[in-house]
Length: 150
Ligand SMILES: [Zn+2]
Image (cartoon, rainbow, N blue to C red; front, top):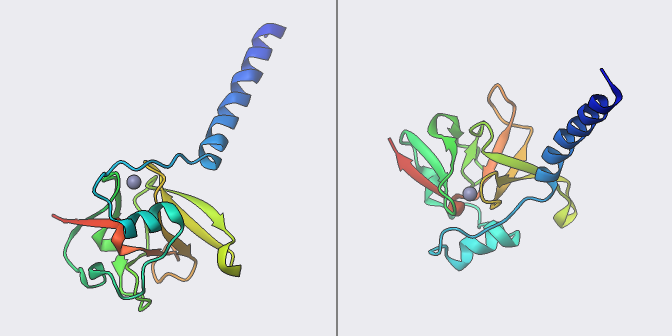
């Protein structure tokens, strides 16, 4: 290998390392659905949380997919949904690649917030006390989800 191709290789290696890092830290947020309500905007783009027990999705038990209310990306599949007793729709797993996570230090707590990978909308927080194999509990704001039955 000559010096030039080594530099080239080094450069591309460096770039391929930096691009995914940049993607995670500069999550692009964009409102795609013009019909989002003020409440949805407050939670998805303003760091809000819906009132516990307020979502009709707490009672949803049909088979289907849960989509992002903003960009329609598929986020959860119904088989991973369970009743956590928290008052928020909860899931043991997300569809792979659906979310980007970030540490959230707000309200004096250290939590892991998750955001739609496609549109950057905030959906909830993920905890390590789930009942499934993953051990995860995705605590979701139901108002940010659209359920589409099979
Ligand atoms: Zn989205």
